[in-house]
Length: 393
Image (cartoon, rainbow, N blue to C red; front, side, top):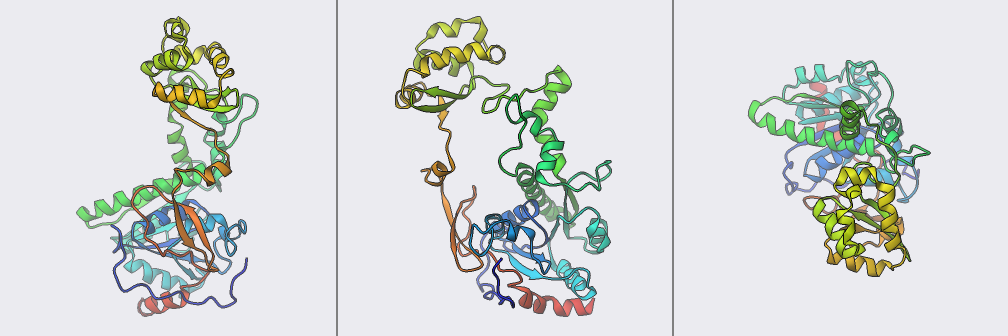
């Protein structure tokens, strides 16, 4: 990783108020990798000031790759607009500085190894007692009070343990989801929980401790296959790029490419048969009378669809799908996504001055000029800001 030997302070914070609904909120984060940084990224995008505390080696995600030149794609994505402060939490002076930050902070987010925050004196019970208005967010692998409480957890491990991999992939081979869904889902849930806690604090005047476990997030997302198993005795099979319980909902081969088709209702099935396949007799076929019947007779249904799709071009079939008001999609490659007409981007400056065109987050517009910080870029300024409070403690 390329970085200056002595990080230079970033420009002073703008004198005008930060934009966004969380403009007066201070977030202090001891975070690594994806889940914690995604939570605080969203808070920062909403206007909060986010102070990211890093060890001298930096967030390990800084070195995942060199896609952004001076930093990795993951770090560039998840850390725009934050202030980077290098501290050694095992040193009493630096730990006192953190506590002085927390005395003014609204939110503290940490995703350290199990038990690490408690050993540092930064456990949720201690902090909420000392700072009653503080919202403390512990992001972990497995929930407290479970036999897995102290188990280390990473994205693919949690995908495996929670059953995500059991329902993903082909009949022959299970698979992880192609992106870090456990990390992303956990960070998103943590963000939502913080917003709820901030709203509640407006009424109660008190903060609270929030526990967000990766396993809990994925297990809740597994509700449909789990409930099918618990109450119907049905194990969800792996069908690759095909839906297990809604049908037809999969790609079909046209003469010159693939088209993904989604049928969500009886009315759509009727239009699909009459307008797209031009085989109205399939509407009356008892094998396809309702969704569950179509699921159970998917192979026969696929044969009927392939017979029509295979003899027509994508252009012809898309015209019919549009006429029948049937939802469809292409199976995009990464190149297709990169040039996709629906993709909206955000310009972000990297630590070395490079500019990257990131996918724009959904929802409210993100303020411009939110640079990704170099390691320790804000250490001197933040130390000066909170030093007097630290000495007084």
